[in-house]
Amino acid sequence: MLEFVADVMGGLLGRRRSSLSVPILDGAFRPNQLLEEADILLERPGLEDMAIAPDGSLVLAAGPEVLAYAQGAVHVLERYDSNITALTFLADGRRVVALGDRIVIEGRAGAIDAGAGRSFTAITALSVTSSGTLLVCDGSAHHSCDNWQYDLMTKGRSGRLVQLDPKSGKADLLQDGLAWASGAIEDGKGVLVCESWRHRLRRDGKRDATGELPGYPARITPTADGGFWLSLFAGRSQIVEFVLQEGSFRREMMETIDPRYWITPALSSGEDFMEPLQSGGVKHMGILKPWAPPRSYGLAVRLDANCNPLMSVHSRVGGKHHGIVTTLERETEVLALSKGSGRLLRMDLHHIRAASGVTEA
Image (cartoon, rainbow, N blue to C red; front, side):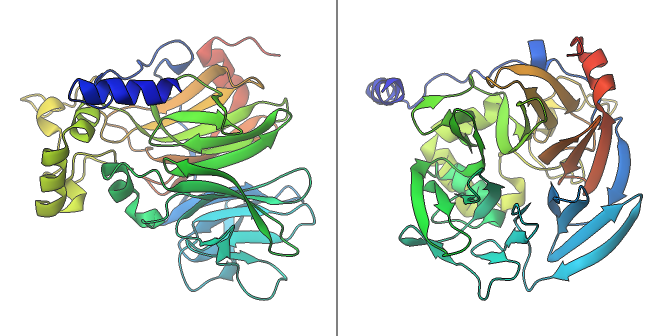
């Protein structure tokens, strides 16, 4: 209701969402270099998602391949005909992968390409519930996973959350009208879903589970103590908020400029001299300012069971480990997947707690 009132008032005043402010990185979001200084376990193009199998092994998705990783060694478990966009495991150990617009379940004949009355378009995340069903995040009805920037720049609100029975293939619609659904998880209080373009977590489509986030949320994963790790694939900036309010400018930008150079968030940056925002980020001597506008950023936050932020890990402006799309906690290690750099990273949970000033439980 408040969101509707804000939109109406913004329209009467000539703007939608007239404030250009973004949450500052403070408190539990205080910047550090823990992601940038993390151990690099693997470097491979196309890394997209990862999951821990029921036997405790780590499995990754990279391009069209499913990889098993153990003690520095990697071998291919499966290869598909298109790139994998999400990965998970059922309780019985069967692997489930999303190939953008369809779901393939190990041991089941045929892929599932539709659910709840609509074809899948951009499956961004998969999660298993306590009853054995699958939570499927379909980011948009109009744009594929690779075209997420188009969905953001057109203010897409066509994402949805579907609950799928892996045995029958029957699917029920849980939530619709989502601004790029990018992650979901069941907890003891219901279902949490990540809405990237609205910078928030929603519980059962009824209320925000967190305050406004300083970045664009990606996938969310559970921890042993009932909390969560939430990955944020990019940081927010005032210039992008401004562009989203300026319809004429945004349309001309999209029609006349290569998408690589749009003023949008990115999974990585600093490799091309034609990228935007450079005048705000580089000094005369070529030194990048730590307070420069973050076209790309590395960020993941640890939440407690009530979705309160406890601590976070960062790769700041000028770093390489940006575009964090999945973060997993396994015993005392924290694994993060940087899509921007194509790297699998490892950090020590005790070290993160100590650096963040969080007392051990």
